[in-house]
Length: 320
Ligand code: NDP
Image (tube, rainbow, N blue to C red; front, side, top):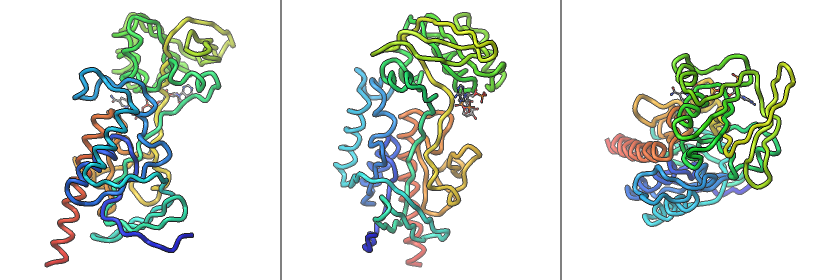
């Protein structure tokens, strides 16, 4: 255990578009932000290839390059980016209170403000063939990667709102979308289900799961299995989209922050304020609906502005 305790004005946990945008704003406001990157520096975007929908990149940009550029932009204004994993938090309940953070199990930090941008991770089925072909035709984001399968045959797994929305999105781009739902009904809202059934090129298969994703380097097909009859069937596809939900990375904040029943951090009204004064949440960790790089960046900006205002109010209260 390290005995030294470091004091930080603005600690940012997570290094995706939300974290780095918060850092750019916080650094420019002279809050001397420190970013802890977490296990996946750069966040989810580093696992995607081309990013074509972030405004300002007319030719598109690959995800890892974009994240390096965001990091450089944050560092240009004095952000300190550190590789490390926050392992423990003890947030103060007091206005102006100090938040205690432990990094990598042994480094102790006291933070005046904390911006949580730890994101969410897409859930995968866990099949060996699925994991091997991630980035080779297996994707967890139709809005990010659907365009690459224009005019082609693809498949999607899941029966919730995300799967329904993404299947509908893909049906407008692709030739045919086979949708695999493991139960005999979908969990998605009726309105979303209606959109799926109204699309003539979505082949909806109930009671159906993936037996294996076919292909060595890239996805070439799918072997499906009917979980009622055991009947197997192979189809040719070039893209497979997994839409079985996301898990917000909030385990270390449980018991400290208010969350919804699926673990997303709750924020107050239109702000990024959590239930603890001086602790803010931005990006996918508090957004289960939009989950885009640009919306994450937007809430990162809001979190830095909220943190700056909070510090000013605390300073004014101390002076008074
Ligand atoms: P959900 O948890 O709602 O749905 C996940 C789906 O994936 C379920 O159909 C589930 O099946 C299926 N699934 C889970 N694990 C497996 C597996 N191993 N194999 C096959 N299928 C599996 O997640 P979503 O991402 O769809 O939605 C999350 C939240 O976000 C929801 O509250 C949703 O309403 C909301 N949302 C709202 C949108 C909107 O309003 N526009 C858009 C997108 C999301 P089963 O039913 O059998 O458990």
